[in-house]
Picture 1: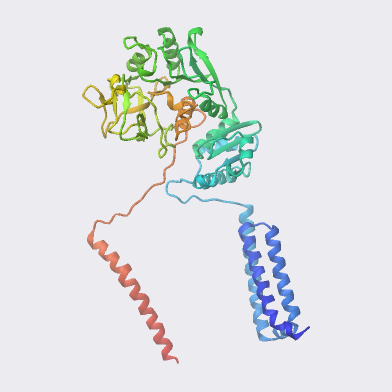
Picture 2: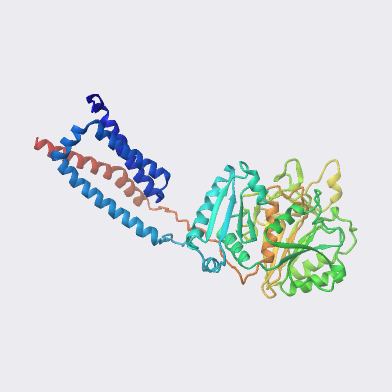
Length: 527
């Protein structure tokens, strides 16, 4: 071998050792003998071989010297250590075990979730569509789905795609919104806007129990058209319901004697004329039998009813459910759509399964009326209320509707309906009868769910969540959201604060310096 190559032998040795280290690191990280590991291992072996070829004399001297003996002992120990590590990794890989060390067990699935996973009759594929804008939501969904994958022993798989960089794939899956998760089992599918244990487990249960889930939209009173693609239609929210395996059907109460028994929920979206007494009787019977009713009721200025015309539905809601539909129009100069004081935005949400995922997302309600909870625990002991959408404390319900079109504009006075910081105006309220199990959602506006506005903020989600809550079968799933326990150390004792400061800032650093000085002095004595 040419002696001129000896000086490059150390390069080959360095490349070889580096290649072996990279190969070992990749294998320990991935636990797969993939192409990257094979390539790094090949580079390592090739580097060592070249080093030996370029300096064979040095290799012979090393093998026959004291360094070789020490090196062989070190090599045996290294091989033994690597063997132990390999064996432990293999045993852990074949027998995976997870421990949840959090105080509130926030990383442990609820028993209902475990049962739902065990009852899956076929593999489930989860496909998430998240752009870089929703990177945080994607990471959260990935962590959650990884837990489902492990719990199901791989029966549940997942993958993620960017709908912006791959719009064709998003179109193939029928996905029109960013941050969407699609779960599929056979020919069944569920589409979710939020990835949480409650939502995913509910979707798994619905996939495993593909029963007919019919939602009826009341017709015959000039309601919003669920088939119309115009700006005033409801096709966008209807499509979202369809993607969640709802069968959306129209229902004319004037030509039927009862609400169909397969109705999961009944929706009345923006009637222009009031329901008749006979139609209202059907709704009442349905609610008393444990049904669910969602009423989107616009203020009088948007309907065709005269001011002196009675409204049986408004009277019924007030007398039977303790919910008063105010004869007003909400005005909000402080928290509304830009330059649109009649388009109030939510100031906050109540705590309900309908709104618990919407806490930081705005909703808008063009030309709405306020909904007042007039019932109390004394007058309606079997009813529970949740103010779903609360308006700004400065908003008011204008009762003089003629002032809305005047040159001076509306202004709050004593005749108007006012809220305050503790009891703001509500534009949406839910109620539940603990005896009959009937559920009711009343919103003082129907525009928020139309094609023209439903894509604003969380408008569509609020409507779909209302239907989901109304149609929920409590026998299938009843998961309570888990919130991590927040613990804060608050020191009020001045002496304790000073002792901690003295120990951490003074005593510990001085102890380290003193120990260093002792070591230095001992070494100086033996020099």
